[in-house]
Image (cartoon, rainbow, N blue to C red; front, side, top):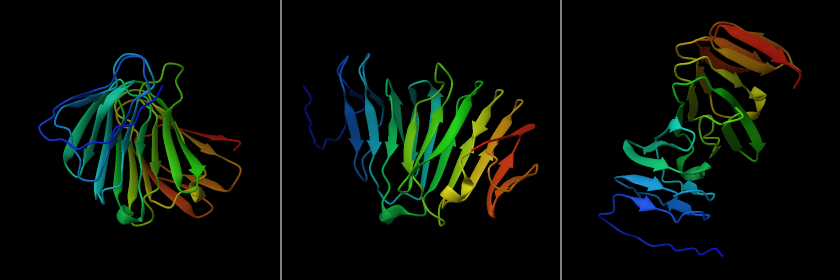
Length: 212
């Protein structure tokens, strides 16, 4: 069975979910946890960050199910979680979203889900970081993906499906950017352009065009 409890509290450093359960931790606007949100062993556990009018949200993955989320400088650590969900509304359109991925060899895909929703996921058989679902912050905001150290690859979506400016930094290593090639595409050391939509890129040694 599932049970939903919404409560407010102060002075709590760690939230621990039950083992082998489906726990959802919702961080309401202005909410914070000094320690770690831990989903517990097994199960399928989610952390949801509700829109709080944030200027910058930084998602830093440190392992397959662990990392931190920093909301305008206030960090919340997490462990033992599956999806990370950032629910944005018009109140904070214009937020700068930063994704820092682990210093490992990562294969990554950015997906446009529709309706303004996006997904950043690992495509490795054993994922190196947790799936992130989030809202496109719009043209007044930005999306920055830092792949980190290691030999990394990233599959971009059709850039016309993004409203926010996109920057992808390859980091140290031999890195590959993969771009759908069904439309006119131009790739330089600094940009990827599809039919007038442009993403900024750094630190890539290889580029691959694939059928979209």
